[in-house]
Image (cartoon, rainbow, N blue to C red):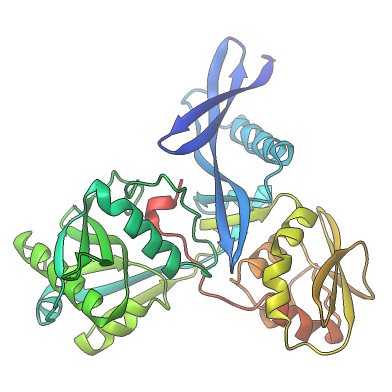
Length: 371
């Protein structure tokens, strides 16, 4: 039996600190590996530190020996050691649930005919994005995503969209500005295998949406493509803009794949969420305390007119598997959807409080930030 050992190395991917965990099997130091990207994301207005799991793989000749399991288990241990509150990944079907990961948001796409986009009239100038546009685009991104769960907190020195749909290289990017030169919208896309794919779009007001829509339609027409696909949240304002044009929206809820997450440190996560949770329970009257028991530990939440506090226990005893609690924290599933799941016990008195604490939301992470 060859000796197995995990090697850790630190790297830099653009603006991000990255750790590589590689499994040594005998003399081979890279039989199986995983990368962990250090980032922060929003849960409502709160900011949570997470590790983004990327590039899980085992070389040919070493497969079917459980080595991928070894590196995934090592990744959880590493994230515990680093103090991350959560872990996230984009995974294949029926594998990552073994390590505590559950689906945290759906796949949402909007399909609009090129000819429909060309019917729009825009009053703003649309031009290629320059380096000097990075700061206004960053500010606009922060404004539009200030409270959207799962959006990544981009660093202050962010300068470009790092990736396009399908984990591909960056595409073309444009901004829409007014006569004063104020950036009011932006978009980035690529053309791949005969598809025009918009990976991110944001704007303020009908003028920005109209100008971006027409510009994208013009570029799709030049590429000879009669339909544009937008990857964006299901409840994004641009969806409403496109309804009068005629469009199709597809939302897919994977059973056990795609965007998946898990809690790494339960109590620190809840402490991070306290300001956001306090806003959510502002209308809850009286005093109540809930003790939440999971398979990775327990935490208590005390709610009164002052807000939410993290405590050790709680009067109302709740049992929720970590994976399901993650889905609730991320706004993917509500209390009424999980109350009858195996391993879940939520007293009736606790249900309205948990509904207030963990409502369903339009969680989404833009393609550029998916590790």
